[in-house]
Amino acid sequence: MRTGSYELDIIVQGYPGKSVCHGGLGWSTIALLRGEGRVALIDVGSFSQRGPIRERLKARGLSPDDVTDVILTHSHWDHSVNWVMFPNATTWIGAGELAWSVAQPWGHNTVPELYVRELDRNPRTRRIEPGEAIFPGMTAELAPGHTPGHLFFVLATPESDILFTGDAAKNRAELLSLTADMTYDQAESRRSMETIWKRWRQRPGTLLVPGHDVPMRLENDAPVYIGTREAAISAWFENDLERTTLFSLTLREASPARVAAE
Ligand SMILES: [Zn+2]
Image 1 (cartoon, rainbow, N blue to C red):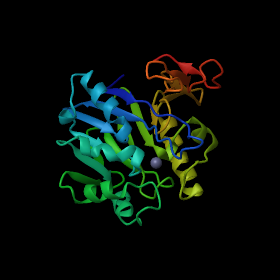
Image 2: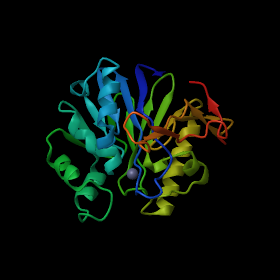
Image 3: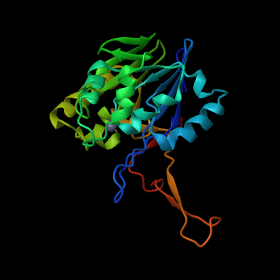
């Protein structure tokens, strides 16, 4: 998808769900943004996404070495740990988010303690202040609630804008209800989502890329999905590895949300 001088690809699509018996699912959005000499990833997922990241970069003629910028919305494990995959990248994270993350007691939440400790002492780490520009047209805004120093990013180009909301607005249901499923402060989360809505409505055609859902645009002030949801699990319930049972995790026919063609 082209936006001004940038090309956007959702290389891993976020999923708006939780596992029922196994804790957090953590299927988060990983967005590739290319242009103005940058090869940037907005959030980089976790261990299970390393293979898909490599494959999908390769399909575009890229390797992890080519990534110039890793831009993190927040420090949670399912968005952040793969910063270590990109040896030539500058990793951008909110100054307040990183300071909060390294101060967390070990073993109590979903901050990857050792990965943020390394990030804190890595010379390629850049700490962002809210309102700061990361590269031409791309600025960071504060959106606390899900974590205290969570940022969302606004790419503004002459043609159209893109919002990368991370987990400040994880999915369509959160955006519509203005309530968050996982938050340190429900009132803060609501204020952050109101800020995101204000920015989303400001310019018609603005694409919103959430942390755990398919991107959306507004049509008549209602979010419409851009692209098709893809999610499934393949299970070994038979007596050998050749036969698998496929469980689709989408509701294509019964989906309550309209889907627009990309
Ligand atoms: Zn999170």
